Length: 254
Image (cartoon, rainbow, N blue to C red; front, side, top):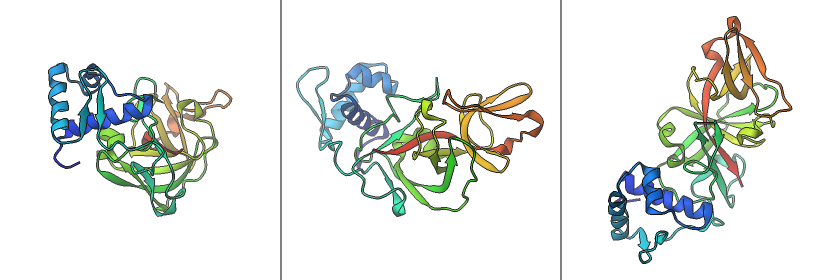
């Protein structure tokens, strides 16, 4: 979006997302809370700039009277997240990118939540798709670079600046965290994780995605499915390099 500051671009993206999620735009106060702008005058300054630059129309003085110009219909061709090189099909009607609420590790409404396709709001980045990872029993990770997943960096927040890779999920052990069979997870490369992070880990030479729960004598890799049991690794058998990365988002064909 030429001519926009980073904050103006984020505000416009947020208005787009809220309209797609709930059918109407956010209030000025909601925009301020989302952006961390305490003053409604500060929000208004950004909205006036967006209107002046032709990206926004304000319909009267109503609280929810914001209308982005040329907002894309949810049923139109996806441009915010596409699978490159034929991975998972091309030219899908819609897609979704999920993020995780840090308070509970599950996909939530708001920034990074499941959203219909919208016009790209940030730089498009290609994330290498390395293969499959199990959300059930661990399976051998494919080290080959199969293709890439192209996604709007806006949806990944700060994680977009980190080394990332993507894996396709098989199995249903993480369904209660909003990760389903066939989803593509975005993983931030790192060998350490905090308690309760959702991680991709190598266990006995095989890769799996689970919630990381370290305890005094063991490390538990816990599924988000009440019908399944955790994988338990003794402390003396656990190495930091057992963790390949922390899940920072999910891509789903709709």
